[in-house]
Image 1 (tube, one colour):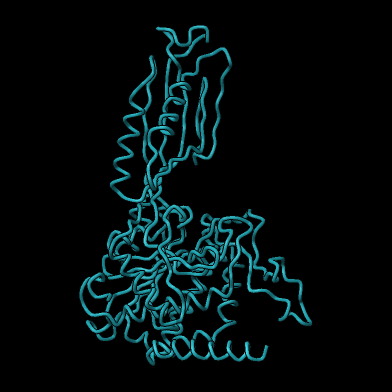
Image 2: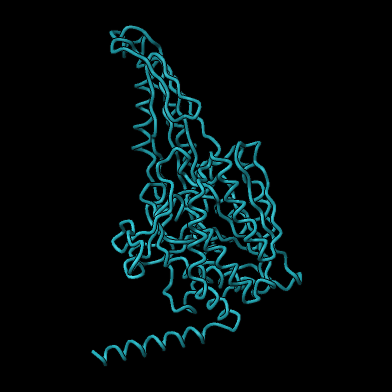
Length: 463
């Protein structure tokens, strides 16, 4: 037993020495700063989670911004708040840290994220709770609490993405403490409406897109994907858009259905279209969900397209039918091609019916470009220096749409470099608190190494 313990100790020391050999003096200071700052990130996370910032709770989102603003100012960022009243959202936080020596700060890095959550004020899921080792609420209020406490916490937005905001701040704090931040060009754009984007998107994402056009690499601080203990890097994510099919037909007594005068009616026409979608459109990285159907003598959706009203009788041929769904693709080419196929299916009308399909403003796809892959390669070089295994590319089918796609059209971008947890968008949402320091180290060292790169495209300068 003693020999085994000695061997483990020797291996641990060897791993520490190996890491030290792979880190320069600035990087060593960055890692040490994060290791020395264990409790403050958790305290900040608790403070952020206790503020309800559901997308429609505009004051709550602004309150989160007010907590973050002095954090960035303390690191030397110039911070401003951009109201988004015109799209009925809280606003966007922008923080800028220009290079002190222009031309000598390597790559200009854009950090993005969001301050809102899916949990509105009426949600019963409102508070930050430490969890015990079994995942149950930690009841150790006193005594041997350290021994009983676990490494997890639950709460609205703990992982999506207030944990990511804490990772971002921890990384920047370590860069500041090491002196490395003085030689970095960094912009931060935090939206207040990622979970329910304001429209038009050209206004809601205007500042994020403008920042991307003046940056060289982007990091999005949504949660870092982890499966069975393996961390993944996200070089791509599918876009998402909404579609609506409206069908119409003749109406009258059901005895005439299928006949030359009555035809098939709107519901049969809509059913034909949806079944053709199901059987004819399938391909890799494509999904097309049907979320709502209404049909009958009358059919009308509500203003939010989350429900509606329909009337009808068994012996009346329905003249009206509506279906609403979403479409998710991995590339703009796939979006355009699938849309044309859907339009073609809709146009093949049954007798005495008509139909049309409309597509609505959407989150674009983030394609797995060579620039994105080069950024992941640089991140895995950071992992090697930290003694961590490589992060494989995450299958884009396992991640939803998000803000990273807006900037990935202009610069190499990684989606999801924040905290890690589970249960996002549900009352089971929780965060692994041990993921905060390791992901903070990854982010901080990645930003630092980007600031040290020479001129040229990322795919050319990442060796």
